[in-house]
Structures are given as C-alpha cells and as structure tokens.
Image 1 (cartoon, rainbow, N blue to C red):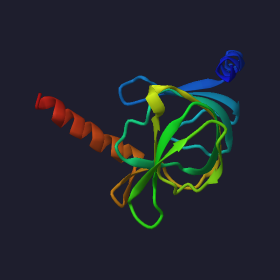
Image 2: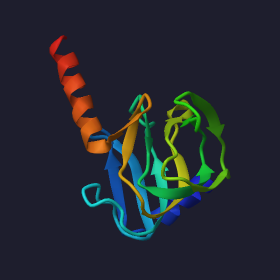
Image 3: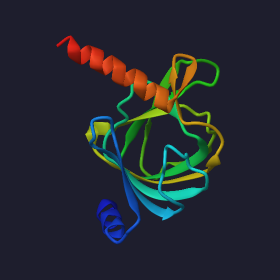
Length: 163
C-alpha cells in the first residue's frame, strides 16, 4: 500500500533527477522536495530534501562517503549496509528495515548499500552544506570520486582486453 502511495505522490513531481550507475542504468531516482539538482562538478552547495527510490545496489566494492552531513528515513524496502568502523577499516554489515530513522550522519561516514533480493527501496533523504569532497575509501586511504572512477575504468578496460 505504501509503495503505491509513494508511486502516486511522485507521479506529480516535476523536479526529479535520475542518477546512473557506471553501466548507464538507473541507480537512484531522486524527487526533489526542496533544494536543487546535484552537480558533481560543482558539488552540492546548499541543503536538500529528497524522496528517492534506489533501484540498484551500490556497484562499487569500496565504501564511499558524502560531501555533507546527511540523514534518512527508510520508508519502504530493506537493504544491507556496510559501514566503516571509526577505529579501523574493518566493515560491518547491518540490515535496515522500513521506518528506520538515521537522523544525522557525519560527512566522514563511509558506507555502501546492497538491496535485499534486488528489490528497490524508498527513503526520505536530507543533507546539509558541503564540507568536503565526495570520495571512496580504498583500504585506509580516501580517493576523490573522479580519480576513483578513472582508476576503476582503467581496471575495467584492462580486464575487458584479457577476454
């Protein structure tokens, strides 16, 4: 029932963006309640509130952080989340259920999301002003997202040439 209500509500939104994964497939469909569309080249300078549908798991094997403090309320669906322990690079996995509130998280919090049974999830997501750059954690080293994707594409190209 809630899934149908969310679909009905979002059908009236005229401000949305679709974030693609590296295969060019939709990863997140973000309905902008307040704020503006993202621009990774300019970062998010202001605050934002979005209703978003995550349709695929994060594809990176490495955890990532956001440029701003953020929070979320999971509305529908379940996901597993790998999070980085503050004291080390050891990760732990937890399952997040509907109506789970994550009020405010540091921009240094590293994580990755995996959908349960590949079923989409809906969440209300908010963030503050940008405090740093978006990045991926390779071991205990943070790599800027642009550099990370260049490295990933080089590895993918090398792997594809071996086939």
